[in-house]
Length: 145
Image (cartoon, rainbow, N blue to C red; front, side, top):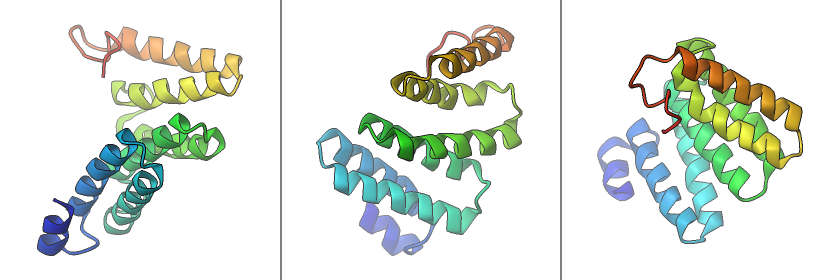
């Protein structure tokens, strides 16, 4: 799919970033971490270049790369990516939007893993407040993604 999209759209089209992210996920699941990281980073570069640094799809790539780093124990690399993804999503959707919940949850997990319990608990309180305000039946309200 990567080759098809690259041929059809070119090497810097946002559609190529979708395939690169998917391929990165496959590499991550199969333990090919260097290949996964390079695909995630390239997807982010493409989106930043084609869409601008404040696009929500850039935030998605930032979150994906941050999550990857966090699962690899590379917490110091993951944290600024989570922070940037949150800033983009907050600007786009508002500070109390349910759309923030997945990034907040993963960032809170990073804070726990870093031993920063007070910060993690504050973030979890924010998540709870967002869920309490979410409309009934919302997937965010129940805590699922």
